[in-house]
Length: 392
Image (cartoon, rainbow, N blue to C red; front, top):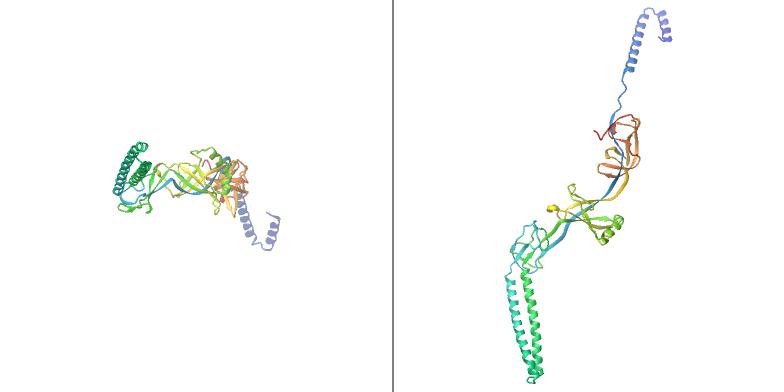
């Protein structure tokens, strides 16, 4: 018992003997409670450090990608128009279907053109008959003119008539050829292999060169994709582009990827086809064309797509999972677990995102452990129990 407490008890016992027993009892109860609390505090186990999931900072050579917005187009696009005027009597293709070169698409009433061809052939026959007559006249008049039986003028007239007849025959042959062409033009055939569009003329319509497009055909396997790149991006790749043109090389796979409007990645890789001849002065971009295999004609002209391509390889890049990085008012932080399992919160400088990982430019070293799960429940200096995220 403390000395001061003993002195107090003596004074109380001398002044109030009846209260002494109560005071001693209360003091004994207080001392026993204090001892029990001290024993409980001594026997209570220390709190367990929180468990977190960690991943190691990896160092790899990673490709960096550029991405641009593009539009698909046919490798070859053909507009189908009538070359002669007449009534449409037949359409022989299914709209939206694939057709081969030479497939009959439309047929125009050919009877007027058959009549015109017959007339042209008749004129040719007359011209040929006249040619034969004038040729005989020349053969007859030559010896007569030599014998002075006819005048020289009569011989000259025969020769002139013969030359004119030859010209008439040539003109008649050209008329026959033109009439034959017009007759052939009544059958409108596919000029290329490709997918047809919707027909803009129906059977019974009067069509001709001035009536516009009847339908369109596009070659879509492979399909072409146009996308603009900036002047700076073009200048970085200009040397490679020129080398490719000088070598006249067209590789089958330049590693280009196509991301469709539904965010699906097209399964076939593409290659560069060409670069436009000039930069658009309004936008400061130059148009690039690439081709992608299109088996089954899945892709059609006019689709929105994003083109992604490797532009360089970053050597020895430090990578961490994106979920290990926390953004706070424009700064990026990572929680690092040291060798003594204590947490250190570091500010880092981030680079490009590579899939589900982030390139760290400054702030980390290869092999260090960063927290990927449980970042919210830790603070700087706290001791944690790290568990590997790769094995979870």
